[in-house]
Length: 496
Image (cartoon, rainbow, N blue to C red; front, top):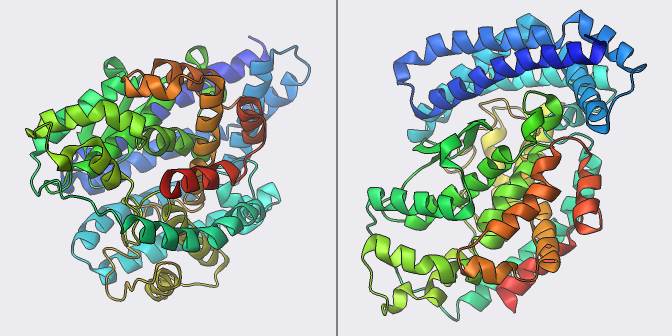
């Protein structure tokens, strides 16, 4: 075998171990009994160390150098580029650090589930201090290895090629535009209040409705499944995608649109380049790109009047509501799913206020990493920003404030900005899809997502990590990422 072929064989072994880790991680979040936590943490730490050691194996550097003298295809060259980045990112960490961080993160995440339910900041604080301390160490090591700033070194793990200065440029128009836009929309919507839908929706019926919608969107149940968890997520591997949601008996829309969101993630995974699944070049391009696929399905397509035209009869049938009930008309259901309000919870936020939730977290985690904010002061800092951005107090309300997300207990520093990058990408991609295929909305109204999914397969899913984000966006939409399509979409949907 030549050097490139040896690289491919080596990374197939790494992919096999990551496959095991992905399914085991899903099980830990969705199925594992609480008493299994300590043993699972130890096992996952051992697995992560094995993957790390394979990723930093000394022969990789030799193979990468030898590849410079080989005639490689464009996809092979792209694969080498992604491997080079992964190797550099891993080589700056020791196996002992990877083990310590994995154990700390898993203990923290398990405690978070308990502490959040009890609104108990005191019990999660020491775990979070440990995790953030390790994240600061990690940022310093990555910054030295990559020549980046502390926060940018962490951001690169989720959004390669993007810096915090670029984020600041994209986020500034949102910070300026969204507060007055929110005021205008709330005032506009107050003129036509929603008619209540009722206060009890059987969980079994919610699940069946969600499964039906997943099938409509194009999810392949031969290679995936739906379960429940504390926090909705999409995990697993392309051949076996694991989605979760959570149910509220008083609000079926929460779970339904959570399912649509995670199905967007899942179909991205199922659409990755089939012949390259064991190689890094097949991986999702970035977490922002991943989020664009979930938000395109949930927000752009799923909350359109076209989709409501199709799904409203399914909703009525699921919960035994009459077709002539004005509460269950398309117009009233549309008002429910597009209601804008200032609220505490990010995952339940509307698409207008959601970016401010993300910007709040982005600003706080930058301060955590550079040391200008301590974990002990985090609840007060969160409260202040919630007051500034939303006019809401989270004093003493840790459960719906600083403890509401799993990301920081799980050590995912640099992840939050990708949610808003994804929202911007989703708007720009969906607009391009509609221009390219003018029949898109009518097809959605008929429950036919085939053409939209084919367009996404071609322009996003099948490209894997072969090109940078700016090139993907330019190829698909004609321009790099901006805020223009997103802000235009909000004004058209909510004020026209």
